[in-house]
Amino acid sequence: MTDTAVRADETASPQPAHPLDPATAAEYLAGREIMAAAGLLAGPTRFAYYGLEEPPKDDVLAGRAAGRRLRAFLINTATGESADVVVSLADQKVVSVRRLDPRTDGQMPIIDSDFAAVDEIVKADPGWRAAMARRGLDDVSKIRACPITAGVFGVADDDRRRMVRVLAFVQESEHDLAWAHPVDGVAAYVDLVAKKVFKITDEFELPVPASSGDYDDEAVRGPHRTTLRPIEITQPEGPSFILNGHALHWQDWSLRIGFDAREGLTLHQISLCGRPVIYRASISEMVVPYGDPRFRYWQAYFDAGEYLVGKWANSLELGCDCLGEIAYLDATVTGDGGQPRVIKNAICVHEEDFGILWKHTDIFNGSAQTRRQRRLVVSYFTTVGNYDYGFYWYFYLDGTIECEVRATGVLFTSAHPGGDHPYSTEVAPGLAAAFHQHLFSARLDMTVDGPANAVEEVDVTGLPVGPDNPYGNAIVQHVTRLTRESHAGRRADGARGRTWRIISTEHQNTFGRPVSYTLYPESAPVLLADPAAPLTPRAGFATNHLWVTRYDPAHRYPAGDFVNQHPGGAGIPAFIAGDQDIDGADIVLWHTFGPTHVPRPEDWPVMPVARCGFTLKPTGFFDRNPTLDVPPPSPHCPAD
Ligand SMILES: [Cu+2]
Image (cartoon, rainbow, N blue to C red):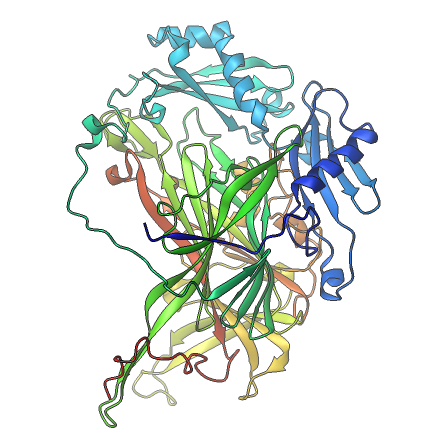
């Protein structure tokens, strides 16, 4: 084993070193004390979210020492009463308490104890047991209840209460993979406050698919292949990065690493050669809508706003999840009671060789040079139900920033009805996986050489034959400045090579052009739900690939603060309602990306990683290739 854990120079001090550092265990406890003393935690009150309330950007940039604040979403599980609370640790007091009306404001995210409660509630319900018994499932101890956020569909008795809808799977033995055995056609609707099943939909019966999906079972997977020889990554002099607390330095890059139960990994104050590029970057929401219109039409998860992706972060294993010289950071999240829980080795920082950086063999002067690319990788992995997501941010020697999401885990399944079912793929005998989308929203608070930025949409096209283009070979850029929020909801266009350039309106390069970074999107479909679908206003952010908004510290989540059972219109649609000027302002880009997933048989029983993401490249940010100073990889490499 050559992989090495590089312990960061972390202090054990409960006091965070920087205003943007994640909240510490001691801070969570201190904040909890303040809330308890104010009487906010009476009765069965639980924390549905608990995290750092980041200080205003102006204060951070001005170096003003802002007092630390925490934000908590509290829910009384007996009454459903919900409150959005901010406490000041410095002042030892509650700063604000906003009582929510969940019918209009939305419900609190799903909490840990909901999972266990739902299992008990459905198994105690005679109607649900009868529905299972009709399908020959008399032993409910073998049934796994899967609670799914309910959405809002305008059905009166569905939408006025804190609820989940519950699908069932059969787990034949302790190690059986339950996702292989969906019980289709039936769902229980559970009122989480009344703690009872209030409705059962039972539309059709199909046989529970029987084939094992237990990929750990040698009888299912077959013997391990023996033909893979070891690959070892060694860095005998150690990695080239320095991690000091949450501050990371590598080559000309510097940034700060944060972590939040809702957004997971957050990156702050990303700069290159001492020049700011992004003030804050995160994946601030995601929605996974399924396309089966039968009784399960409501299946769509907002994994960040409804389930809190960061809370389910994995502890990473050296030599398994990460190879080479690794520095880990722990993440601290909290349980329902507001008690801290440390996820060891949640964030992985390492350096990777990435093939050729540049290379040329010159036909005239005989020079033959090769340089190798490297990237700094900051990543974490999380498990939300059946799926697992890896979130990777890459920083390259040439100034490129890349975000990659890796989706893996197990498909969400149903029973295949036979024939050419239009909405799903048969992935094992009688087992179906519905078509669905994974749509992520990257929140990119840009500061390209300072906060005064603007966005240009750049298309590339040919021109028709004409007096200035007699042979029809002309290629031109079409540059459109996005000047107002109302005009900045944009779609990618692969046929026109569409990109978006984030320019400084204050700084120019040697050619007299604004320094800029270009966002290169993947041209995958945006939300495929009909514009009239109840989901569409709830997932408004996902209806375009790009939005640009004026920076507002309250605009953090593109589907709104309270996504669970929110009727729609929060987040991006509300942010842009004021139609502010975004030209030469402090602006935030919201970029929608992600796959539309038509499952393949090869995605079963566990799915090989599917990648998606986007790239940001310096574009006239430098005056020439910034990597000419990268030395040859080894003395024997130059051929001349
Ligand atoms: Cu998928």
